[in-house]
Length: 399
Image (cartoon, rainbow, N blue to C red; front, side, top):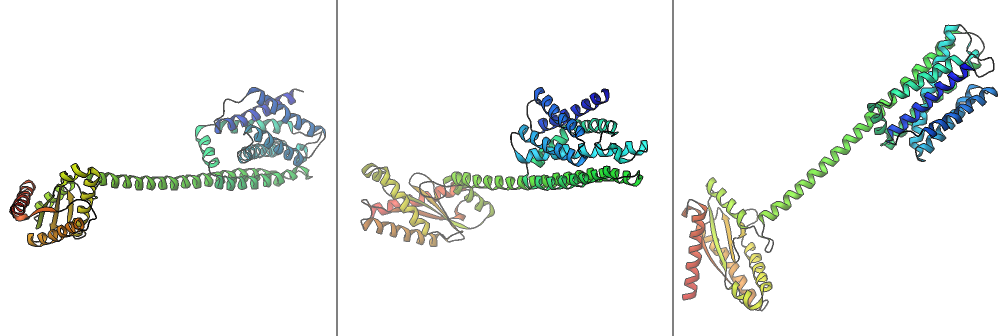
């Protein structure tokens, strides 16, 4: 009677440790006492009935696995794969330690393995007590944070979880077949040592499989982190391009803005790269805004910018909107006379568009071009080009 109570207490500890591990790994609330007590009573009743009916150990442990899986399935909120993972761990450690204790006690007591089967005359009480007690201790130790994290990592990777389940299933079936030893007559020490070896092999195989699965999961996480980092880098580069576009481009005309052209102008002067600078002004833009509205004024700016861009060489010259109706063009490594000629052609095209009736107002530009050697700094050079532009505008008005 007392030995049965001790064995029952050891199994209660094993059962409680098992569901405590499941609860902590899955981040559930503390294990409900009613659930722990209920599963213990159901499982221990099954063991008791199997002993009374003298089922062999294959039937006994087979039924225990099915029962443990069903309870785990319910406790894991009807999620199949986590339930199978936990029940495979529970049955594997429980069976391994039980077989080890049966073989160890058999060797120590010089009793045949058949004496530790599930019969009425069985001497199994001591090894069963030790098996569930040690199994409960092992499961309790597995609730440490590191093991919990390892289990969570594997559970979060279905592909690698499948591999680990296959490994544990193989180890369990190997141990399960070792239960046939308890139906073997004789008192062979070799058979007992074979059982001990099988336990060591199974736990080692399951441990190595878990270690491999964990490493593969970590590698998969690293790859995912790298993909996320690359995605963020691409996103950041895109944001930087958009910021640069906002910082350096005029949104209406699509040309560079004042800030950018001044930076490039100073850079060319510092590097002493020869260029021609053209300062341009749209004639009568204010009159167009006043008479036709700012929409038509914007249209004037867009048409002028388009034609002036045609006067620029790609990747060589820079066109920028300097102020409301003013533009600057940097013609790198170009004589002022050549730059003047290109701008004059652009002016003729702009005037031709207005004469064609495409717009209800006249369009033309005034411009002045200077050579980079005329001034040592950007402000002086712009002022010189501006003066040249006004001089030409006065000459056009007087002419």
